[in-house]
Image (tube, rainbow, N blue to C red; front, side):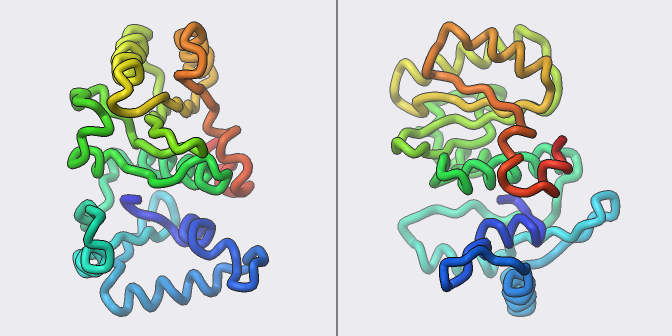
Length: 221
C-alpha cells in the first residue's frame, strides 16, 4: 500500500483479536500506530479535503523489513501522497482489502513493485501494465485493473488484446479482473470479454467492497 488510514489498517491487521473473535474497537490499532510513528517507522499526512489522516512507511521501516525478510524485495516508501492519483490509489486499496478479506487474493504485487519484477507482466509496455498482480485461491497469478473513468472503446479493446497475449503465452498472469465504477464501463467490458470465457472477470466496485463495511461502500458508491 502506498498509504492507508486507520480504518483500513484496523481491518487488515486488527480485525481479529488474539482470542479469535472480531475486533469491536480500533483502540489497539490506534495504539500500535502511535508507537510505530513514535519510533520512526511511520509518518502521517492529513488531507483537508478528505478529513482523514493517512499513514506512510518511512525509510527506517523499509530497512527493518528488508533485514527481516532478506529473500523478498520491498519497494522504497513514498514520502508524500500524490494528490493526482490519490482517488485511484485509495480505491485500489479498498478493492484489495475486499479481495483479501474474502480469501480471493494473496501476495499482492502493486504497480510499483511490478516495475522491478517484470516477469509477471511479460514485458507489457507501461501503458498496458495492470494496477497490480495477485494470486487467486487456486494459486494462479491474476492481473488487477481498476477503471474509475470512462475511456474510448478502442482503448479497452487494445488492453484486452494485450492481456490475452500474456494469458495465452502462460508466461505471466493467467487471467484478469477488471473492477469498474461506471455502469456503462461495466456493460462495455462485459460485452468485449464475453467470448473469452474464464480469462476475464468484470466486477462493480460498489459490489466488491460492499462486504467490508458500510462506511467504505458509502465512500466508493
